[in-house]
Length: 76
Image (cartoon, rainbow, N blue to C red; front, top):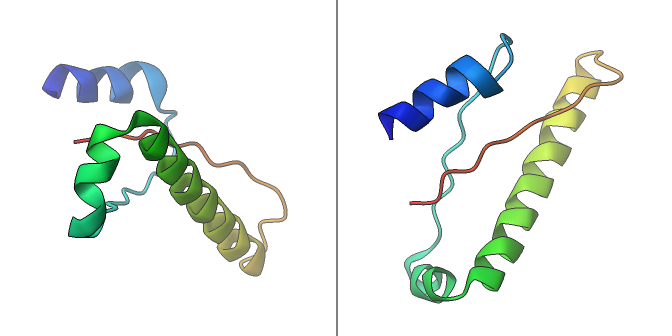
């Protein structure tokens, strides 16, 4: 994992301020999501979409009228 992190920092992520979000599923959903990649993809799409909306709304409230978000997901 340390090589993956180094590659992200050196080659992928821009030299911009970043935030780290940790999302944890309720216990009841962990096994179904672990077994079903389509379900995992659907849940991840929802989480990413909601974080994107939140970050853009907060930026707009602070005077940032346009901006883009980028995300990297590490499934463990």
